[in-house]
Length: 173
Ligand SMILES: CC(C)(COP(=O)(O)OP(=O)(O)OC[C@H]1O[C@@H](n2cnc3c(N)ncnc32)[C@H](O)[C@@H]1OP(=O)(O)O)[C@@H](O)C(=O)NCCC(=O)NCCS
Image 1 (cartoon, rainbow, N blue to C red):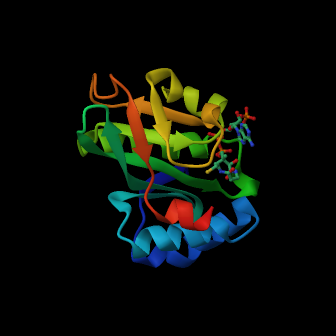
Image 2 (cartoon, rainbow, N blue to C red):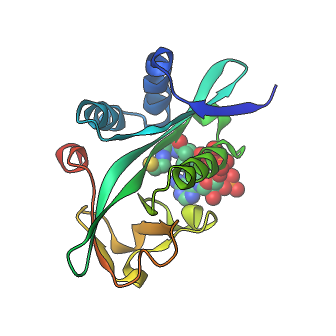
């Protein structure tokens, strides 16, 4: 049977925790995800799991972030991650399936843009581009080159601004 990507349900909670612990080798991301849930920061329908033969082997969550545009307008955008695939199943395209499904659902829900902080070469293949190149800064303490954005509504990133991640990111990292 192939890989199925679907929205996470309550019954996946333990499996999702185990997948994150296995992929990251620690509890930091599990704590972050818990805080995102506690603060109602997870975007509805955008905590996704990848399942193979009834077993959850991958997870990706998107949370609600802000884009403060030059000029004062604030838009609700999405922050992609953490993403995890159990080591035994990595390099088989499962992470890519999760990212593509998330982008599709974000677009369907009408979100204007997605930000991700991660490996630039990995996310570029999905259309993400450096935030700095768009005149966008970010409140996370991350290397500038690791912050990437994907525009879902044309022109929304024009003019630059500041990206603000949901508060659990600053608490946990
Ligand atoms: C990153 C991760 C989610 C990718 O999942 P995956 O199912 O293996 O992804 P895909 O099969 O779609 O793509 C694999 C590609 O990811 C890229 N990649 C994976 N880990 C990478 C890393 N540490 N640095 C740079 N690129 C990486 C490589 O280009 C790789 O290509 P390859 O298979 O030809 O080597 C998975 O490896 C993982 O859980 N890693 C540990 C947790 C983590 O770092 N998460 C991301 C940060 S939130």
